[in-house]
Amino acid sequence: MKPTQEPGEREALPCLACGTTDTHGDTAPVPRLRSILRLVALCIALLGLGFVVGRAQAAELPRDSTYHLVVPLVDQDARGFTYADGRGRARIVSMFYTSCKYVCPLIIDTLLKTERELAPAERARIDVLLVSLDPDNDTPEALKRVADKRHLDTSRWRLARTDKAHVRTLAALLGIQYKQLENREFSHSSALVLLDAEGRVVARSDRLGEADPDFVAAAKRVLAKD
Image (cartoon, rainbow, N blue to C red; front, side):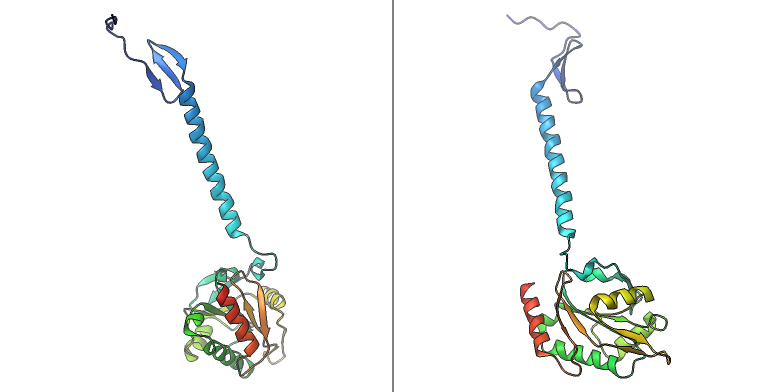
């Protein structure tokens, strides 16, 4: 016969905070509850570790990526960004300056002709970055005037400026030579540099005035992989 519960007595209840059972004020271990709590804690820790490792792997760049270089930029709409923000899409990079009367307009012409050799779906997935060699004079307003005059698609094209030190660093990285002349003009090479989605140099061309077939073919191969 089950004894009658005396007043003040209560059923044993587990203490979730300490993993014990309280019976008449006494405590006793609850191994199963503690095991469950340990298992939950371990799962949370493993999930957190996996998240951190996943983010680290996602952020890792190939060794030969040009996106290891940190270059702050400001575009024609006065929006700040960095050179490495182009990661994730194919991109053509070159350097110019807005007051250039001969070579730089030809660079833009060549880029537009190169784009026209791509199918519309391919064109929509490639970006263009033109960085100024003349940060003293190429303000966002000056860059925007060029973009508007040439009817450039600024959803994919960015004309940008940075400081002189980063101009030198970026030009060296891309293999673009330049020199400021006494008349404040610039003598510079006209290379178009094709980068894949990870910022690796895939192809380059110095041809001006017309699309380089080899360069176009390289762009198509890069876009086919994305």
